[in-house]
Length: 484
Ligand code: ACM
Image 1: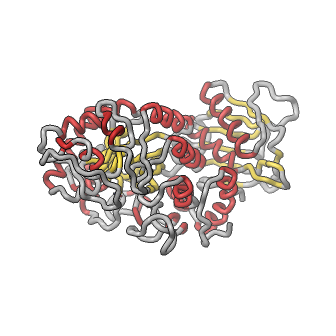
Image 2 (image 1 turned 135 degrees about the vertical axis):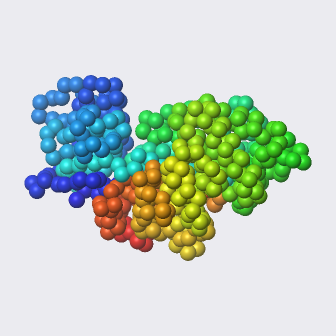
Image 3 (image 1 turned 90 degrees about the vertical axis):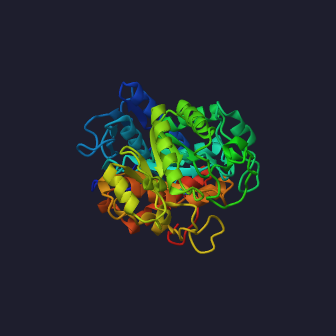
């Protein structure tokens, strides 16, 4: 069987199937701009992956093998959103999506059907009909503890796209630095981004960087969700604005690893204008529908002041026209029905989540003991931390988002995000060593129907996937659980 990650809903190989040399094939696309654009992307992917030029043409020469790229509302399992089909056993080969996102997914599957055989790139014969389990398949990436510039983020997006993720959630602000230009508060990025956990020079995304990042992501059907973390995790702001502190004195900059010591103060006249400025700025530069406003680990705040913040943050985001996402702690306040709650800390009492679900909240599942990819793989692993436990590849793979929180119905789970926090990670090699292979396990958790998941099958497929990482120069952890 071809090694596709995430495992498709339906995959079969005809009995008489043979492989087809990729060299000499051509792409033909439906007439719409979307079909033409995705076919050109397919051509670029095949060139980069296999070093083979597969041109897009209107008039294929007689006898050449055609790969037909097309929108088709009937593609994929009946009634499924963003379904797709790939059939490389027929002529022309069929690459079809019921939506643009579905068609892009079809192209990702086609890429994984191309393997090296006797030094030549060939297309394996397969029939695939597929659609995602969850519409939200993301990665939370912390670029506040250590800064990762646009070029690194584009490499991450390339990997996300190839495994059919569609959300990149950037944790942009924390005690150690403010990593996004905020036009109404230029001091934040200018004066509070030179610090980081590693002691290296920090940095921040300019408006132009953020524009390019969103365009790069959108071309790959990925939405960027920015997070401005409040009312805790705010030392980068209070280190610049003393008037956000009751004593009027700016805090010291911070390069340590503690959490939970910083806060905004609800009753100061400067606080709400600050929140409105920075969230208004983010709303103004964000293409997607969502703003994440944190809400986690505000450990120095009393419950009453914390709840006031949550209500204010929900109001301010609603005023910007965006939809709000908050970490799970917000569920202890009377969140609104539409609020998206991101679950992370499995040590917490579940009652507030059940209550939030009863109020209509939906959940993004990032349980720390399965989805926090900065956790060590094994005891004493040189990168990452272990406070949520050890997460070997199998542990990242074997869990079901629908049953993570007792009492929260699976129907209120919008999807899944892996998360990677960068206190101990300051280079691309660090980052990818922790992401790969586990990110592909989370891809399958988010995409694949539970009855199609199987550890032994995944284990064999992930070994095949490593060829693409080696080719792209991406570091990965050669876990002893996989026969590489
Ligand atoms: C978190 O890990 N504090 C969301």
